[in-house]
Image (cartoon, rainbow, N blue to C red; front, side, top):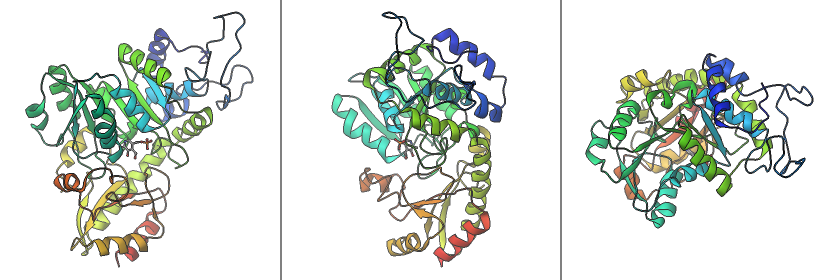
Length: 400
Ligand SMILES: Cc1ncc(COP(=O)(O)O)c(C=O)c1O
C-alpha cells in the first residue's frame, strides 16, 4: 500500500480497518510504516523539504507544501491514530499547539468546562490567550462524580479532561463525562499524555478528541517537542486539519522521525515505567518522613477502582509531600536527589524530579493552586526505566 500519497478520507478508513486487527506492539512498530517507495529504505526517511515538484499546475505526487503534508509526518500521524484506535491523527509543533488548534474550533461566547487539576500551560492558554477572545473557561473537580452534571449548561461546547491529572494524579471517569457531555451537545477532549494509548484509549470510551504532548512518553527520550490530536470524526478531522494548515504550527520532519523511532518501543518502556512507578509509590508510602503519596495504583488512592477499570496499568508518575509540609525540607530533597534530574517535563527514559509550584504549574495563581489541593511543597516524580534498586537508593538518600 502506498502511504506516500495525499491523505484523503477513504484512505484513512481503509488503514483503520487494517490496523484495528493488529495488537498494540505490532501497531507501534508497523502502523503507517512501509519501505520507502523510491529506495526501499526500511526506516521512514527524513523528507527535509519544504516543497514538491509539480509536473503541471495541480499535477503532483500528493505533496505540495510541507506545512500541509510531509511524507515523514504522514506515517507518524497514521501510527498515532492507529495506537489510539482512531481514524485520523494530526501532529503539531507542541502539545500546546495541539491544544491551541482544539480551542480554535470554538467561537466567542462558547464555554469550556475543564478539570481544575491540569497542566499549568493548559490553564495559561485558556485564561491568558483564549479568554481574551471571549471564550469562557470554568475549572471544576471533574474527577468528582456529579461535578460535571452540576456545571454543564447549554453554553458548554467542550469538556476538557486530563486523566490522570498533572500533578495530583486524579482520575476522571471518561465514559461518564462523555455521556453527560454528549447529552448536552458538547464535545469531549481527553489529554492522554500521562497514560498514553498503551494504558488508556479514550476514543474507545466515546471521547471525540484525544490530545497528546508527544514530548513525553510517546517520543520517550526527552529530545523533541511535539503534540498530536486523534479523532474518529471525519468532520472534526477536516476542521482540525484546516486549522493545522492555516495556522501552521506543524512539526519538522527530523522531529517526526524521532517520534516515529520512539513509538516503536512505547509498549516496552511503558511496562517498565509502570513497574518502577508502582515500586516507587510503595516505597514512598512506607517512609516515615513521607506524608501523602499520589499514585492511582495505590489501593488507598481515591481513584484506584476507577483507574483499574479504565486504564490497563497505572503509569510512571508519582507525586508526594514530605511530612511537616516544610518548603526547606522539600527543597533539600530536590537538591539532594542525584539519579533523578531536577527538571521540567516527564515521560523520558531517565527519571526526572519536578517542583510543580515553581516549574510546570507556576502560571496557576497560588491561591487557585492551594484551593485545588496543590501544595507548594508537592514533589512530582517521572519515574524512568533505570534499575529500580538504583532509583530507590537515590530516593532513600534524598529523603535522608
Ligand atoms: C498533561 C500535559 N498536556 C500538555 C502539555 C503541553 O505539551 P508540550 O510541552 O509538548 O507543549 C504538557 C506539558 O508538560 C502536559 O504535561
